[in-house]
Image 1 (spheres, rainbow, N blue to C red):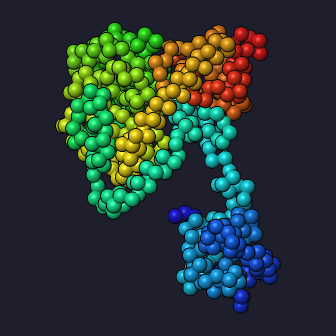
Image 2 (image 1 turned 45 degrees about the vertical axis):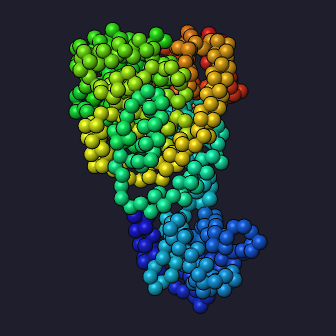
Image 3 (image 1 turned 90 degrees about the horizontal axis):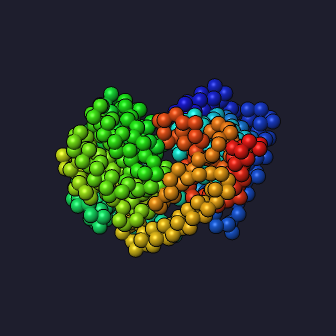
Length: 512
Ligand SMILES: Cc1ncc(COP(=O)(O)O)c(C=O)c1O
């Protein structure tokens, strides 16, 4: 809006005079420059790139290189069509696209002009500029939000490497989704989300011993969206919520946005501190507890069946709801305990997401809960914006219902197991000690023994080797002197990572 207004002001305030050829004559020099620039537009008719695209690329290149400048008047459609030997329709289409991309502006009755806001020289253009914001080490969520710049190793990230995904399979799922008339033409909105996908998810949950009707299952944009909705329905500012400490980095900022008070319960290699939890529940009467049973982030451990039973008993005793955040279930051992399965979704709300298993094209979350609660969640979803995810839901449907999904899971588990084995062998060589031995999945959290530096310094050192770390402070409310990191094992066996570990080890023994 702003740039559009600026462009128009520029053109009005400095209206160029037109030559017979249709080029601007703001000055002799400008006309010559524009004419020379335009003459350089030569099209390659043997290329597989269409003529419209070629013209768009050439003109935007001339703008980016500063050969066409803001407010320059473009040749008339007929003039350019004659010059490059194409139809007027081709030029109209190309000019329209250049207007849409912000390179040109169109003025009724006056023609096309280079936009005032299109002046960025090529080396600063979006294509070449580092699109990644600088990571702010003090922001607990930063490493998750900012995808590291190209060439950096996202050792602290929580997603699978892109080349672990089968692009062809994803393309096939997207094509199948596109072929369906339901996806393409449906105008109305299914607030709960695509019914076929909900049916598919309900079937999968039944295989995990969670009986849920597809109408008591609502789709979301991911697990965080689901948690946000649950907090919106079940809490009010000032309410207390039990959280694991450490926990995944999105949760604490989300609770803060809802004005909830987080009650941290220690989670360690021996599971959840149930006595601590009971004490907090007794003193603060929390509304909710948010727990990851399968493959906790960041420790990588699962809760024992015994602890799951105790947790349900405490929820009953102190009358709080349990949110089972279950995004890693498919990577966990089949026998891993499930609160939803034990409780039958009476006191448990099960939140899932494909975000840890499938690429963003098929990223869908879900909430399974008691019918009355699902109605309230649906109302909140409707009020706060529920559309826009239909295509992704159909892609996820085809991905989850194809036989390839099982193979993807089997392959991913095997690769993670292998990578985890290597990482666990590697860590002691660098005086790094796992906080817990993971039961599966992609994470190991490991601490530096005898720390000799701050987390900020360690992050800086790692970044010098193009490695992005996630320090323990992103996962915990507790102030600790211990320096530890969450490592994604899929990225751990890399020479730059070994160099970083080595530097940390030397610093921790005081030799650097
Ligand atoms: C336990 C847990 N819950 C939720 C999320 C966020 O999931 P989503 O990306 O689907 O919102 C993460 C991300 O890593 C996570 O580890």
